[in-house]
Each structure stands twice: as C-alpha cells, then as structure tokens.
Amino acid sequence: MTRVDRMKIYTKSGDDGKTGLFHGPRVSKDDARIEAYGTVDELSSVIGLARAAEVPTDVDLVLQRIQHQLFALGAQLATPDPDDDGTPRIGGDQIAWIEETIDHFDGQLRPLKNFVLAAGTPGAAALHHGRVVCRRAERRVVTLAKTTQLSKEALVYLNRVSDLLFVLARFANSVANQDDVPWQPEM
Image (cartoon, rainbow, N blue to C red; front, side, top):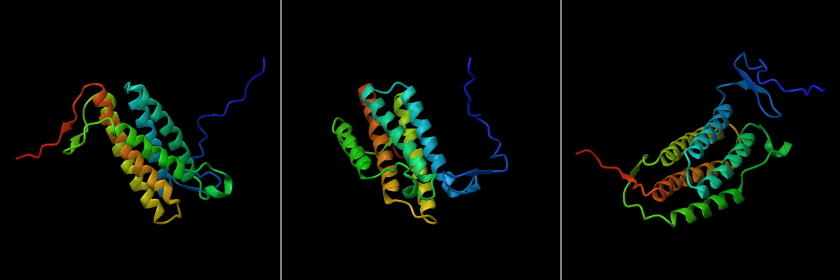
C-alpha cells in the first residue's frame, strides 16, 4: 500500500498573528486585505447556509455559481498583484450575469411598495443575512481600496450580489407563498 501524502490542516505559521498573502508578504491577520477577503469568505458560508435551508432549485443553482465567483473574488483580493500571477478576476461578464439574474427573478415578483424586514422562510431569512454580510464585505473592500489599487469591478460585483440576494430572498418567500413582512414605523 502506498501512503498518500496529505497536506496538514494546521501549519502553525499563523500562530504569531500573521498570515501569508498569495504570492506576497506575510501580514497581520487584521490587515485590511485579510478583512476584505475574510468577509467575502464569510459571505460564501452564509450563502451555503441559505442553500442548506432548501431554497428553490433555480435559486440554489444561482447561489452555487455565486459561491464559485466569491472564491475567485477572495483569491483576487488575497493577491497583492492578481494581474501578474493569473489569478481569476471578477469582471464585467459576472456583473452582467448578475444583473440579468436580478431582472429574471425580480420580474416574477410583485413590485415593492415599502421597505421589508429580513424575515420569511428559513431560506429567505438566510438570504437576507447574506445580503447584510455582503454589504459588510463591500465596506471592507472600500476600506482596502483606500490603500491599495483594486479593480472597480470587485466593488461593483459585491454591490450587485447584495441586490441579488435581496431579490432571491423575496423570491424564496414568494415561491413558499410567504408574504414579505413590511416595515412599519413605530407610532
């Protein structure tokens, strides 16, 4: 029998509070770049929770594609110079696809007449959670962009993903015959 060498999960190289960037230096684990791609990773995990909450099949397929794209975006953000090493890049094609997907699902919903609360089915609630994590990821990328040159598409992409997650949450509720919960200001 041959023993297959396995990569260890723990490397101990981060025990000092630093981590290595793709093709780059070691930086503090609270560096703006780590915060940005770490929040993108968190977003992908929340999307995984939404998928596990049994969203409609067509929504699940969209979410799976978004998770793959988020992995590419995380790699792009984790690489000091993604152009030099062939890191996959989020760009206009992915943004156009998201916009088409938003239009497709939103076209099947009643028009919004007021703000809605993050509520409804477990899948819809998880999608709303993903939306707010996406907004945080967007803020982290804005912070990173103040000190590092990033492609504008990374920020536009996250902005569209949050819109998509909102529409998908409403769609998941609609498919389940669950009304959106309108916001009502206290009187």
